[in-house]
Amino acid sequence: MGAAAGAEDGLRPGARRRALLPLLLALLPSSLGTTVVATAMPTVAGDLGGVEYLSWAVTSYTLAAAASIPVWGKLGDMYGRRRWLLVAMAVFLVGSALCGLAQGMGQLIAFRAVHGLGGGGLGVGVMSVIGELIPPRERARYQGTISSVMVFSMIAGPLVGGSITDHAGWRWTFWFNLPVGTLALVLIARVVRVPGRGRRAHIDYRGAVLLVCCIVSFVLAATWGGSKYAWGSPVVVALAAGFPVTLAGFVWAQSRAVEPLLPPRIFRARNFRLMSVISFANGFVMFGAVLYLPLYHQAVHGASATGSGLLLLPMLGSLVVTSQLSGRYTASTGRYRVLQIGGGAAMLAGTLLLSRLDTATPRPTAAVSMALLGVGMGCLGQSLVTVAQNSVDVREVGAASAAITLFRTVGSSVGVAVMGTLFNHRVRAATAERGDGAVTLTGARLDARSLDRLDPGVRAVYESAVARGVQGAFLAAAAAAALTFLAALGVREVALRSAGGRRS
Image 1 (cartoon, rainbow, N blue to C red):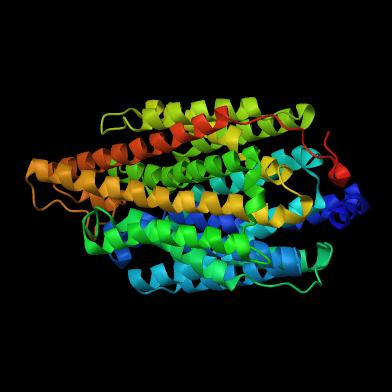
Image 2: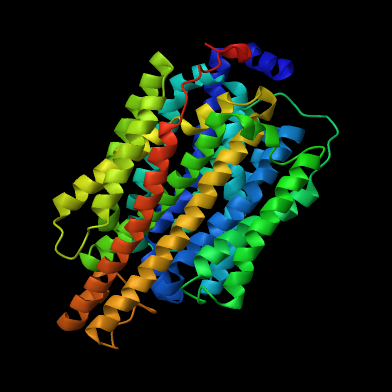
């Protein structure tokens, strides 16, 4: 701990602020990689293959990110966090360029995996470097700014993505990342300085392989079960059985590895375990909402891609305000438990209300429900990484950051998969009830112009089916929100570290 702490103490506040700017800029591409694309996805699916593959274009990104996060975090702990952050940024930019060149849904899914590989390294890399430069108690003073940058990308993302899709084409929603990411890459290389890592170390290849197998089997079982394959099919059964086996193997490997990817000792802290659960559930809800709310607005209300982004403002605006206020509260008081309990309650209420959306729901009513969800996410998001990093030794900040980012990413991947499965099931059921075989979402474009060309009777069936699907998706989100609330009740108020690793 001494070396790391000394590094923290030796970095002047002015140098911290100068280093923080390019790191915050680097958060934009990874956040924009999801939010800019979200409002374009219905159009992308229509151009390249159909809405039944919509969730896969997101799942491939999050699956690759989740599988790579612990490896990125460990490489940073061993060999230098800035170095591997730069590598991750380069991979992310290559993936962005390739996604914009995709000629079919299969290519897009593959390129999104490359995209996600870099995105996983970006998220954990930025948070690990910030965790090394700024102690937890002082970090709370910057948390509002950090949260604002992330939330700004969430607000700007749907608007920019919708505008780009409407006026320049969906491919530019991927290429948009290139100038922002390149600027961040150059600034990090020139401005950010963190202590080097020159020690010899062992890379836990066995643990990495087992973790990838564990994550892939879990996510694919959740994605394919009940949609591509029946739940009792050999494929889904094999994947479901493979998850506990590979998980047990990974835990065993970590207990014997010289340099484990996720040191078992970090999970001994009660708050760290709870932050992991909350991070998983938060990712489940957040990414599902960002994907399925634009789909609802475009398909049911006939909003354009830009319009669907604007309709997300109640959720994202309340998230910004709440993040700022909760960050200041934590910085001034050092308390966070009440925020997490309140955030869990607000998230649960918001998702339950959103599960009641239908074709007759007035937009103001939907806006209130989204705003309540935004309040919940704003209260929770600003403290998750800070509390997790505060719960472990300073030397393991990278592993702790990787674990929290991993759980959030896996949660988002599972959330998109589960919500997608329920969405598709309800859409098929609603269509079958009306007995109109002409109504199908396969290959459909969900923009307002295409909806206007539908026969009124077919369009009514179409809108009702999508609304039913979105209801099912948010029932799953409500279950994850309930888990968040229960976990928050168990959080203990532990003082945040000040500079040098001291508790204050």
